[in-house]
Every structure is written in C-alpha cells, then in structure tokens.
Image (cartoon, rainbow, N blue to C red; front, side, top):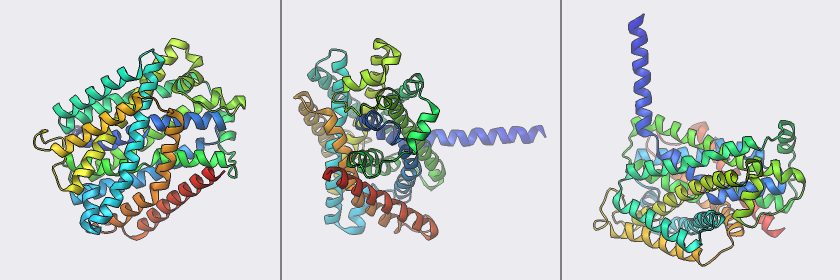
Length: 416
C-alpha cells in the first residue's frame, strides 16, 4: 500500500514538473490581455454602467479559451507561427492582409500601453518623457541581452503585479445583491452601452494574442506531448485575466457606478482616484500604479515581440530571441523602431482614455479576419489534431457569434 502511495505522489510530482516546464506562453499572453487599455475599458464600464457589464466578463472566459486553444494547437502541431502558416496555406497576399490587421492592432496597443505607463508616472510627478526613456531603454536592453525563457520569466514577474486589483476590489466592499441584480440588468438598446460591450469584447480577444501565443509555443519548442499542459496553461490564464477585469469593473462600480453619475473618466489619475479612495491616497496610488504598470509593461513586451516576429515570418527572415541581433537584424530592428516611435509619440501627449477604448473597439472590428483565418487553419491540421466533428461546429458558432456581435456592437455604438 505504501509503495502505491509513493508511486502516486511521484507521478503527481512528475505531472506538476511537466506543467511547470510548459507553463508560460498562455499565462503571459493572458496577463498581457489585461493590458492598460483593458483596465481602462473595465474601469469605464463600471463607472458608467455599474455592474451591468460584469456578466460579460464571465461569459468571455470560455470564448477566450476556445480561441487561444486553437493557436496552441496550430503552433505545436505545425511548428510554425501564425503569419507563416497563413502564407503557406493561403499565399503571400492573404498573409500580408492578415499581418496588416495585426500591425493596426499592435500600433494601437503600443500607444495605449505606453500611455498607461506615462499616466502612472504623472500620478507620482514623473514627466512622460522621462518615463518613456526609462521604459524604452529597459525593454530594449531586455530583448537584446535575453533569451526567450528569460524574457518569459520577466514578463510573468511583471504581470503578477496585476493581482493587486483583487485586493482593490475586495477593499471596495461591493454588495453581493447589487452585483447580481446589476449583472442581470442589460440595457441592450443603449448605443453607449453597446459601444462598451464592443470595447470589452475587443479588450479580451485581440489579434496580437493569436499571433503571439502561436509563435511562443514554437519558440519554446513544445511538442504534441506538451499539448495537454499547454491547454491548462491557457485555461488558467483565461480565468486569471477575466477575474482581474471583473475586479477593476467591480471596484469602479462600487464607487462611481452605484452613485448613478455615469461619469466618464478622462485620465489615469481620475481612474486611480475613483477606484482607490477606500485604500487611502498613498496606498491607493501605489497599488493602482503597480497594477497598471504590470499590465501595461507585460502587454508592451508581448505586442512588440509579436509585431517583430510576425513581420519576420512573412518576410522569411530570422525572427527569434534565440538569435543574436547581428543574426536577426530585421527582428531586432522592428522591435526597436516600434518601441522608440511609440515612446516618442506618447511623450508628445495623447488622450489616453479615448485612445484606449477606441483601440479595443477597433480590435472588435478586426475579429472576423483574425478568427476566420484561425478557424480555417485549424481545419487543415493533420489528424488527430484537426478541428473536426461536433467541436468544430461549436467553435464555428462561438467565433461567428463573438465576431458578429463584436462588430454589431461596435457599429451600433459608433452610430449612436
């Protein structure tokens, strides 16, 4: 009996050890998913509509997993990045169309992330130009001197600061009955509400997430033996990112939303003041700053690497952190130029809030292209990993409804 128990414990430890080796791509991309723009969108949602967008955060968990699981499957089975796979199956023209949507999303995301970091700096009296100088130099040094695994560990460490929003939500002391009744009250005919619905959908399913995670599992050299663990990595990340989104929304709803003011929040400073009064000014600023910086920096890392990798894939040049800068000049050049150009733009001054929410709405409008290619590629995988049967129908319905509703909500909100 004792030998069986020892064997069982050994097997359990072995499984956890395997998971520990595989975990990373899913968790990093999901922490990046709760980026500065997403936090701003969640805060706006809670401030303007109370808990009425809370249920949407929970509904998006399985949808997010379904989408990102396909990227894991594609990357592990094919051994190729998303842009490269589109080029091989549909030709260079379609690859560039897909990359065009990615570049749009990446540019918008980078400006949003760096604006979020600059906003936190302003809370503590640090000018935007100085914040951007430190961030751009630091992230450039990280990429030029690190490997994929070191960058992944840095990203997870930075992203872990987002967990402070759980404390923020708990300290807000939301009323359970108010949360439930608010979540079930859906003003589906209100254009402003639909605009934020689209923004929340776009904040959760972003084009660069698909490209990043597929390239990451390839660069990490995961095999089909790692597929189950990689799915758990993705599922864990999907839950974590949406819990963080829900916490930010709850904190804003518990303060501004319940007051019925439906006030818009125009700066990062206003968001910090709105959702952290119950923590005290100093503690509130510190916790909000840590959470926002963690969210923005991990997303900046992911977005910049995604743009550099995917353009490298389509151009057919080396595009990995495992190559030295002299071996992959295009990859490191795109990475550096993206960071420097975005940093300069943000340092010059930009409307953070309208930009961030608008970027999420743009992501929703791009969903049909991104999810369409994802589905078609998964249908072309070799057996037994090909997307087929009843699950293929479920996936098709899920991405069709998600993309369709995202576009409808965005157009209705813009039109309104």
